[in-house]
Length: 104
View 1: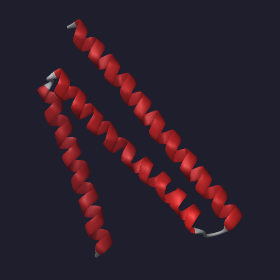
View 2 (view 1 turned 120 degrees about the vertical axis):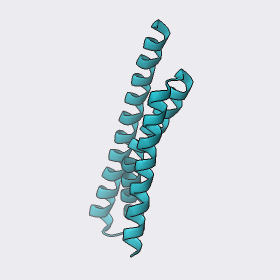
View 3 (view 1 turned 135 degrees about the horizontal axis):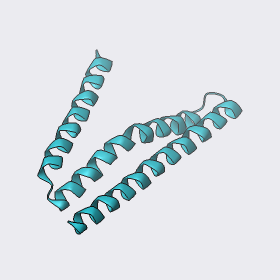
């Protein structure tokens, strides 16, 4: 039981670091993009930095689900594996529907 508690604490720390890194990286890219946009106007460099920041921000929760899934598989916690897979599928369906709507 103690090893499970340690594994959960390790997962929480890992997820906290992942979320923090994603938000910081996104904020840095968005800040650079905004500053470039203000200095240079609409440029390819500012657009790339802003787009990168937004993609990182949107990918961060998806990476959280992936890391959680791997951790739950390693812990052999099948209830949470199934639950996390369902969340991942819902995220995938949402992205697919968004792309379909954008293409229409």
